Length: 278
Image 1 (cartoon, rainbow, N blue to C red):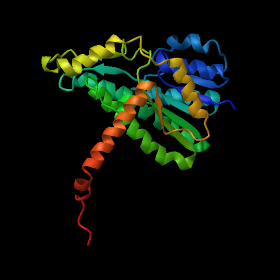
Image 2 (image 1 turned 90 degrees about the vertical axis):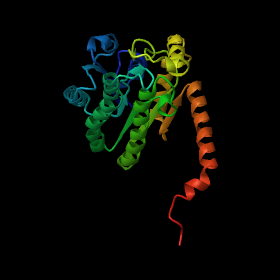
Image 3 (image 1 turned 30 degrees about the horizontal axis):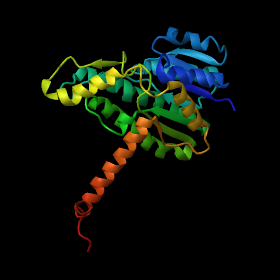
Image 4 (image 1 turned 180 degrees about the vertical axis):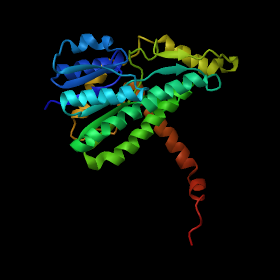
């Protein structure tokens, strides 16, 4: 059955490959970007099935207009993919307030604004699927990207709460946690802090150099990621959390082991924090 997809951040990376794939599979799609000319090559191949829309997720008026235009053209929105996002490199002490707030506006508040506009449509339909692109960095924190981690931890927590609020309305939620993929995230889509503190050379700076160094050579394939997302959306029982990439699986399992160790080691202290049972 053909569905209507609304995808943010389609000029590059996951958004671009996903929009191509869903249109190729016979679905309809609102393909959004800050500059619609960046996605015109995609939509021109599928006249009638694709709609290019101008969308900066940090501008509420553009969010409202884009969602309304998509709903007017296609009559419904079945799948929302919140993909727009940026990175930022800097130790927490080095990070510049303006850059951090800009990243939160795009990665989290923009995502929430788009979701808020689409939810009334899905509620009326009593059906829908919201896919939020987080990161393995939304489950596991790393030096040099602490504030990026914070935006993605926020997306993960938001998605878990949203899933519990909307399940009875027929609205499903999946939060996607990729590891390293060959997108622009570690390249032009991520700024460096202009502040450099030498004491972080062996932690934040070293990890930043490692991530920058393998940009373009990451093991993750965005085309395969797009197929995995479609598979999850089409599943009868889609996952709430979808890891993508071997690095994501390894990182998540290591985090589980760390959590278990802390919980088990400090179990007695944890339980003794309650009032004594009478």
